[in-house]
Length: 74
Image (cartoon, rainbow, N blue to C red; front, side):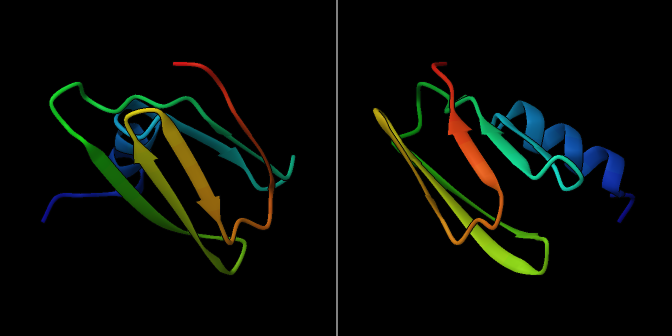
């Protein structure tokens, strides 16, 4: 596979609406769920801990995140 970290970050930022910084200890979520989808879930290892972000049509839930997080309006 020709996947690398740069491409994965583009997917996370674009499709999942995520931006995070370990040095700043911040996770920002701007939901970008495609209109044809009912839900989506992303799991990421952040700072040695698995973080789960679940998107539903009108809801975002973040579990296990060691960073300060905020959810922005789409």
